[in-house]
Length: 85
Length: 248
Length: 201
Image (tube, rainbow over all chains, first blue to last red; front, side):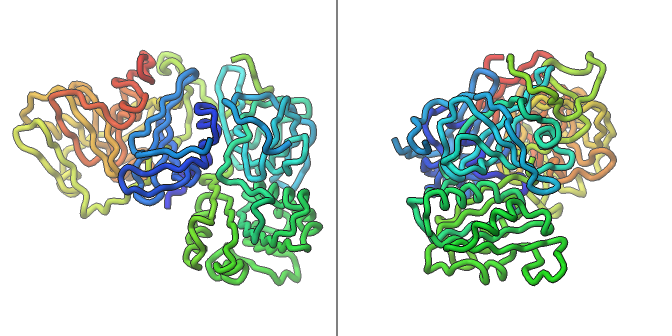
């Protein structure tokens, strides 16, 4: 347990600002262990940027870096994202 | 009207403070008028952004405490010693002042009356804010879903929404308090931090398949979520909202 | 940025000699804890530090061996890409020059390797010549786990994400291998004085 950890819900605003759809209820499949969880249930860490980790295996699913005008979103740890449209 | 707003790309909006409600010695509810507010669902939050004159910015998230059917937005803020944002919000901000906020966001940690119950809400301190929005929504929709709120507070005077919870209790809503640091004379309720034993006594059994929402500081949420899984509740039915080490 | 929150000042930002504050930074006396992942807790009896990769032969030190190496106390300013700077921080650590002493290599790049999988890349010349340490103490105390203990890299002339917490080794590489943040939006080099925060800066 890490006292700094937040839920994926904590970055809901940022994700919606970028993707224009509700992302916390999207289901992300972990590329390392295969577990499928709501983005809102991932474990969020704030380092130099934001890291969202698989709640089962700690694999870094998504990274988010932002400056005033650009947001970089890395999905390297995610196999698939399922979004309800 | 909640739920009918078209989700689009979010932008920062300006919100004007119109009223302040003192909940406890350290907690205030700030009431905002937000231009073009699209409505929200119980459990959602907003991101608040403050900008100093030299351009320095700070951002925090606050759960929306008001029910979805209101026109004004209520945020319940706890003063954190040495905090950066909460002292400004609770001590400096005055009626007429404006802040920027983005939202509502967070469809994951949401309860809508149509989902029904039974509903189990477990809150540590100011973590009760989004759960109060759920209780207010429940009542506004005249839902009779069986709802149990277990609320951990430091003392009787620190219980946020204390009188309102007392008024709303009944008709399917049960409120259980634990007061961890001080208790009023004659107190017969719980006096310790929430643990597995307390949860076993308070929560419905797993066969009732309650919808579970846990909110508060990260260590609190961790302890409760683990204990509920240990009591054989479905992990998928447990939704958590961690505040981090402090409220901010 | 036209909107200003009346009366908001934020965390007390210290006044400092402007020549010591890189562009866009604010000086703080706090030490914010930022982390890309959960805090590792490697027991000291399991801890090792290694030099691997494009080297004549790999080196490895146990914690006792590492702590027996000559170390030095340094006072440096540190700058985080999230805009806070901390001046006159004191550390104790083993110079990377000491660790690389006697290592033969043709490599020009290095990757810092940490518990938990974090990596960050630098030119080898940026960790040599007295510019980098493996630090085990901060402010006179053993380095706390939340700040990277038992040992972290200290490379103060670059943004602090280039100073990996919970460091366990250096891998010398022939080609540049961008690390965790470098592949995800942060600048490949990270010079605070040229404000190289992001891609394209």
